[in-house]
Length: 379
Ligand code: B12
Ligand code: SF4
Ligand code: SF4
Image 1 (spheres, rainbow, N blue to C red):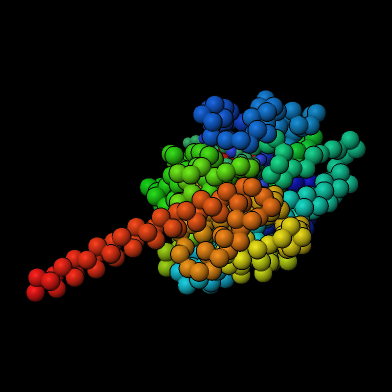
Image 2: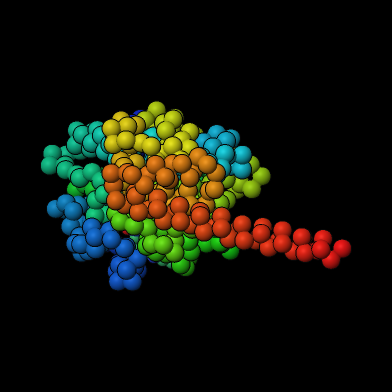
């Protein structure tokens, strides 16, 4: 067995579903990446704009870097029901699938370190490596494509023909020379479902997401207020209070049943990635009553803590602007006294939208009533 084969076998033993190896050569999409930044598509994600030379050339990450071991971990945990299906209660909060269990950074980094220990033990002396999951200055989708894990979809996701796109990526950049895999082959063909379905028009063209319009950015990364013109789309998206999966849900590569390219999606067996009750059974209105202590307790070791309590409650208050029931209104009124100004302001805005809608409706009802009465007068 070659060293590359041994590393791959160990990666599978450690629970990674996909593994491939590529070289540490510079990005072939440097121009596209620079243009994406220059057009402002990164919004307030300043870290994506820094050290571009390093991000675009993995050899800058480790002296003598020769290979990149890329792993994928499946996080799909839905069976037949769950968010995205028609029978979901309309008041249910929807958390993106990737964020329903424990924080994948912790889960994957610990395993990648074990994989690196294994590599160091098997390779010649002087073997070294660096571990990355999401946060590092590395173009993960590009190296994953090169290592054969999947291909670029028009929604920008890395898609594996058999497994869809519900998987995380992680890497070891190493100075060990390992056999490389061939890049993945595949593509979207004439399909445009994700572009058509994106509620905010964030997929401005195939293979480009303008983060400033993406609900994932707006509900997780953006620290301040959600721009007013995009709030109705969040509300209409079906209560996406943390992240968004719409462009993945509509993708035939991720579907089950009759509209699927393949009949089943693999369910993750990873215990750490199984959904927590709070991420699949919360009502949007209930989130507005979460105290800081409750937030910390429920989202300990969860990706959701990235948005902090005020970010999650801002999102929930935004989503409620499309609801008119007593529960929603009571929760928004309660949030008018929230300790966080961001939450108070969003609650006030949503209440205003609800009350304007109600008075418009009563005007319509009133004039209908009036014309019915007038009709009686004439009879
Ligand atoms: C910033 C970021 C975001 C931003 C911007 C997303 C984006 N599409 O650019 C926001 C906050 C919006 C976001 C959202 C999400 N993210 Co994110 N994100 C990242 C991060 C940190 C950097 C991505 C980046 O550099 N974007 C800039 C663009 C230009 O680069 P790119 O997307 O990698 O695209 C490459 C190719 O498309 C190619 N390219 C560029 N132009 C063109 C044009 C053509 C024609 C072609 C063929 C190729 C091409 O070049 C690019 C560079 O190599 C990566 C982790 C990492 N370090 O890479 C995770 C990552 C991409 N995110 C991930 C996830 C899971 C998500 C969400 C699904 C989370 C959610 N459910 O809410 C959504 C998906 C939204 C979407 N459709 O992309 C996973 C994706 C796994 C996968 N299977 O693809 C990653 C890899 C994290 C991880 N370690 O698992 N994310
Ligand atoms: S994650 Fe949602 S908002 Fe972002 S590009 Fe996909 S569908 Fe659009
Ligand atoms: S929905 Fe269609 S166009 Fe979009 S990524 Fe999937 S296959 Fe490609």
